[in-house]
Amino acid sequence: MKKFNELKNSEILMSPSILAADFANLEPEIKRATDSGADIIHVDVMDGHFVPNISIGVPVVKSLRPITEAPLDVHLMITDPLKYAEAFVKAGADIIVFHEECDSDCQETIDKIRSLGCAVGMSVKPKTPASVLKPYIDQLDMVLVMTVEPGFGGQSFMEDQLPKIREIREMIKATGRNTHIEVDGGIAPGTAQLVKDAGANVLVAGTAAFRAPEGMDVAITEMKK
Ligand code: DX5
Ligand code: ZN
Image 1 (tube, rainbow, N blue to C red):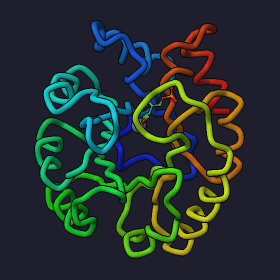
Image 2 (image 1 turned 180 degrees about the horizontal axis):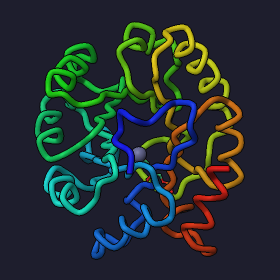
Image 3 (image 1 turned 90 degrees about the vertical axis):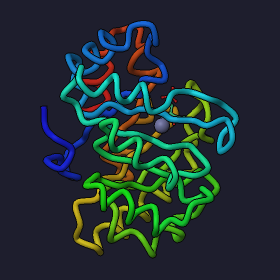
């Protein structure tokens, strides 16, 4: 299993979201994901304030750390990521992705996560334009483009986000940095092709991975190719 900083943005990588896993069996569920070809594990943290839902937090990340070698991609859908970033890094996150729309100062949050030796990413909700990322783009390891309104799994993919993915791919090219583009929300074999064509390389899938009727290995192989 590769470490996060060994992954290249020219590779198509799968980051299954454990939001759709069986929470009573997270260890076997994560093993099922990595055995099926997952490169990264996506952990959705929701505070009931930034988004209208509450999911999991620091203790779960800490419990997952010893049971998998997969990089943990922690998606903070929380109002104040600056306040909680350190706890998530100490718990074992390999990359922290926070939202541009949060209340923390974005530059301070990037600096804080970096100072802790962790990779850092920023996410934009569907209505947020790519241009807000300009001051930060040359400092990021990943940009997460939400292809649904954050808060819940199982929603429909928003095709109108494809131009934004293309725009961010151009911004990244101009920096020359190995910055990944991650997409999250409604990703399944059909929509995977659209986002890959637009320039995304890290595909988050909850429902389409953990609840694939044909099996997670078949679904992941399909989404990667
Ligand atoms: C939504 C979360 C997603 C979610 C994706 O706010 O950020 O990671 O788990 O679920 P699917 O793949 O089912 O749309
Ligand atoms: Zn997510």
